[in-house]
Amino acid sequence: MTPASPDSDPTQRTLGVVTATLLVVASMIGTGIFTTTGYLVRDVPSLPAILFAWVLGGIAALLGALAYAELSACMPRNGGEYHILSRLFHPAIGFTSAWVSLIVGFCAPIAATALAFAKYLETVIPDGYHQTASFLFGDTSPRDLEWVNSGIAIILVLVLTLIHLLHVAHGSRFQNLFTIFKVVLLSVLIIAGLSQGDLSRITDDKRPILEAILNPGFAFGLIFISYAYTGWNAAAYMAGEIREPRRNLPIALCLGTLIVTALFLGLNVVYLTAVPRADLAGVETVANTAIIGLFGAAAARWMTLLIVLGLVSMAGALIMTGSRVYETVGQDFRQLRWFALRRGRGGPHVALIVQAAVAVLMIVVGNLQVLMAYVGFTLSLFSALAVCGLFVLRRRHPQSADAFRMPGYPLTPLLFILFTLWIVGMVIYREPNVAIAGLGTLAAGGALYWVLDRSPSHNDAE
Image (cartoon, rainbow, N blue to C red; front, side, top):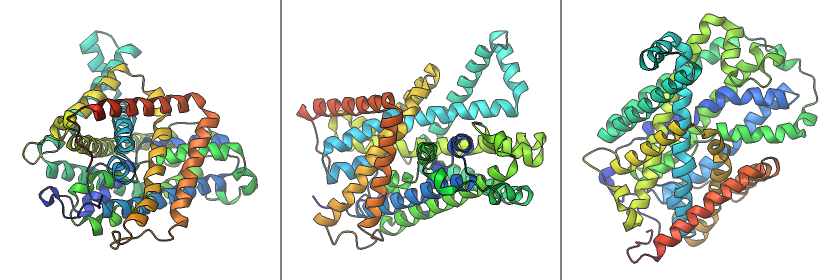
């Protein structure tokens, strides 16, 4: 095995460093940053310790991005963990990661993001929702409004999928526009919030920081924070379509992660200085609570609109990146080759359609909480495995990563692996049913690979 040439399939390399960076940003900024802090305020007694937890999460995300930068720059092909794990370990491990991506890595978050979009949109235009429910069902009961929510969520998934079906460039331009708008608005919110907030709420918090860090609530809170930072590896899924991947992939992964880390820290300072901690403890709509405290109820509607736009960007990023994983699987398994079909300049149309269909099914069923509970558990396992692949890559091909090397090797990848495994261990300890569900998903993926591998038409992963 030799790493893929960075110039392999150059006709598909249509995405520049700006699009790749914004893809990382869009994938990371989602519902997590607008909800997680309320859980930490409830469980962690020190406000400075809460900020420290977000710093730790950002450091872990940056370490992961640095490792993926070296791996993806050396093997610049679409697929993310699927491609990395297939080449460095075994196709069975890579296939299982792709299976997990289909079930919980992309389709479930796409559905959840679309549903969150619909629910937040309802708070912006409640009259429109009630009129729609009354027109369709003759009533405005909570159940009827839920059906309207589901319909809006489905429309969002279908529209975004259609955009990416038509033209890769059109999809990336749409993605860039929404992401830039989101970053600008969040930056304005941070600047305005810092000018209005009461910093003494943090500086006057004299509760022992070390005691708070050693508190079990701090440890469990890092699990939620790791979920909020999910998406730092987004550009790796599009590695086969990024121009000059040896140069642009490391820039996109690292710069995108740094931008989001700075935004997350700024937003959390705004949250913690906006209102007394008692008003935030356990609150899921922490962003709205903070904005009401700073600027009043009228401004909360504009904040909600910002969240709505952010969710559109996140859903688009998930749709764009997820389909490339299934496309790469289709290139490696002839039985699934229809996943790799493309038409014209659009994205992999079968992969996009199947992904949309599964996401729509999840929206209709509506039982997303169980799926979302183990997303972090299963994806953390494969992220840790992929970073372990860095040691394999350096041993087998010490000359292959000359364009970019992870600084601090081998300590830095080891720190990421230990942090990620610690998160996995906390899930097993605190939520054993989630761990069992995650391991069951892995077993199902392994069984499917075994069936495909026994087929004479199986084409080994390159």
